[in-house]
Image (cartoon, rainbow, N blue to C red):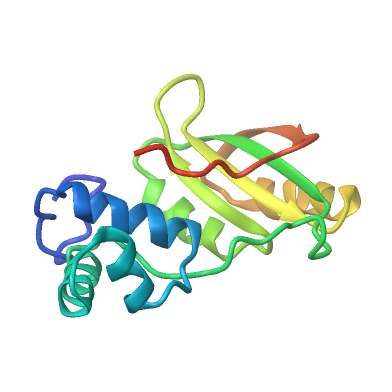
Length: 160
């Protein structure tokens, strides 16, 4: 099986029409929107909106619902992107260890000068230093790291 495949997963996603895309935009802006308000905004019945949202979830297009957090206001005022070079063919092992890191927010296998891009949010620089120097560099498959401190960040609204 290829590196990125995990075996059984959701079925292939069906093509999205304009109504599906409108629903996704709405739910990304407000994951707590009611079925009624979604239906009214996209001009379909509540039953149709409910069925479409369920299909988007079943197809794996919608992976879940959650809150967008201001990390600084939540006590995690230090953010950093960390690049990692790893031993070839160890992505799955490294990914599982990165998932366990406190403050890990996003993990990506990428192509280029490094192999993995990791976004972390920590309470302060001391905690970030501990995470990089003690936790990350202790992972045997990690060959090197580079830390890029985030001075300011902003989540963008989706542009479908």
